[in-house]
Length: 379
Image: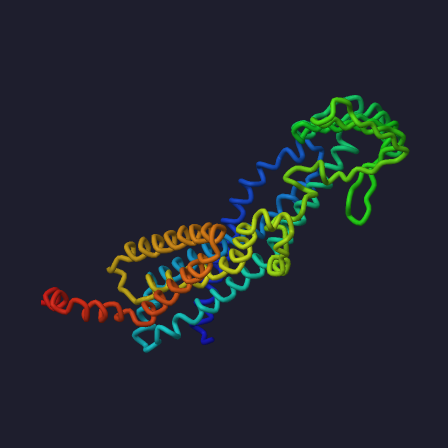
């Protein structure tokens, strides 16, 4: 890249990083405030709070990065035009292709960032959130809950223990699970303790019984045990411990999903939608960049207003993203919508590219379609 191209690239990159950091920080702060109960009511440390809330950042970056790029390109082009730099470079013979080059490099860089985030970082973060929430629930059971209290950990799930031992053991345990309609499971044990095996947390009960009441039996079924292990994941919120949902699976797992798997069979459209969204999201970075450049990349004097061009660019970008959300929803309903979902950003990108490289192309097309109207306007 030439000196001028490096200068434009640095200006746009700086504006992009500033916009990405600001927007991500604002949205993250708003979402993090909803998780304050991790510290207030669940007895977690500031580190745990920052870890859990920080794991939502990849999903924010995936959505915000194309928007931040769009804002950065508009800002940079407005700044260059306000300083008459676009006019000077155009007068010196710089072609639109060469002037566009630093913005394309930046768009490719942002596309790579968005692709890395959507294809790997985001599903990995969602899976780690599941692990962290399980650990938080385990800490509540074994550390936070005070002895002698009956605590509703979830709607229909009650936990109680009489006293805690010196090494963290719990004595006199009572657990009742009414979350499944018509089925009541009651666990009573003399002692219990939590253990971790292969990153899975279990509550091991000793010397007790399990009473299960079902609708088809008037008498409860009672099973005595010397030792019984309960997977604590089943008591975590948001279906933690259930089969991984679409957003928590890696891209490779979505590509090679088993149609006979119960969760996939029950939600085939959701898995298809999640897979294609991960490939579609990075495309909007390139398209947004080209929309902004097509609207503001032409040299204009400082007396020529650019407000209308900025408004049209913003309108086009918003309309495109809303249409993208709509086609993404259609993918969940029909596999035929996949072609439409990809055609939308690609076609808009190509249209904006033609307009950016040949701003008179549309005028010539319109002249062929309506030669008399154009001649009258010129007269």
